[in-house]
Image (cartoon, one colour):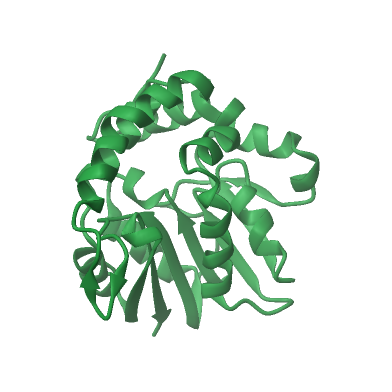
Length: 241
């Protein structure tokens, strides 16, 4: 079995995702207790797409997130550097009409200002040079266009009037992430070792405020974020100046 390291060498990451492609969608639904569907819907809503607009879904994997984006009436393009993921997506009957493009997020094969919006879900933390990727996303986005990053983040739990009501939430989540998630992955994934890397990459990923600064420094404007599921996931939205 193949798993990548936190050095995020592109060949290792691509090979690892090739190995999980067969049961990737099922595994994600099981490990997230079905929350992945809600996260995809919230990402689509945050993009505020209109019929006829063009949206690029980077690190789209099998295209399940791209299929959700297409529900808006926009022309949605799925891109990924894992050939195994792309092949798995093309075989799914509900995604066969989507355009799938093999692409490196650091060197997208699209002209400047090609898209009204760009999004990436649970893929930014797998890229070796995050600031360069964010700048590349800006390059292919039209002025006034939008970026939405849906990514695992630092959980804070439910809040009431700005106060945490479950101070133990993060501890429980981190225990699930590092112990229960790899165990569950062994039951449902086609490459369970990959989920050890995925858990480690989530734990090492910067908090919401730090990612906001990184997106801003990459040239995006009016960056803001909102937590989903108590901060287990955060949506960062930004505008192309």
